[in-house]
Image 1 (tube, one colour):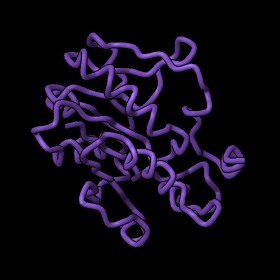
Image 2 (cartoon, rainbow, N blue to C red):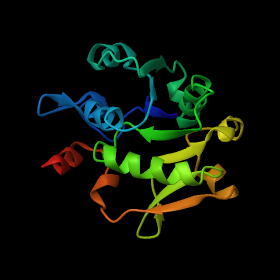
Image 3 (cartoon, rainbow, N blue to C red):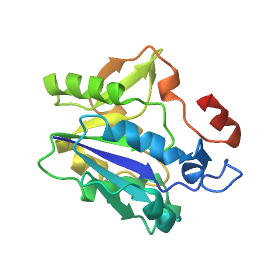
Image 4 (cartoon, rainbow, N blue to C red):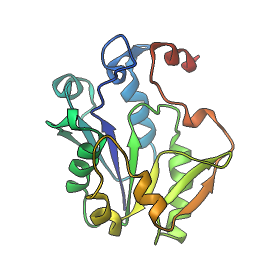
Length: 191
């Protein structure tokens, strides 16, 4: 079993039109595109960590037994609080878990499955996607990394912890899957 934490509590500071994840494109919110790719993959459990717009997320997110929606009341304290909250809710029967970003709608279900397939063979260390020798997201962590991730602080993700430890690389050749939505202009990437 593989789980995923979908981080969705950010403040969208660079996005001028409100919360970027609930901004609609072709009648669907950005978060729905990201979530559908995860739902179509072999991931068995999805913990969505929301923040300021928790009630709006609850209205738009699909009802699905795979999904748990958690409200991060300390969302202003940074990314680390969302990570820590998400890992508290992971099923301990999982052999690993992704930390996913809600603003990555192009990372496909087949990309998730490619990582899971690799992880099934070698799951002692985090599995990090790479494009052109650069570390990318989402990262697939072995379950025994839960304790290490409890030490993340501030508005930083898990990169420092990954770098301090051994990790496995998996290469990808398509740059588009790593595109994220930060500004209103980024929405044009959907075309």
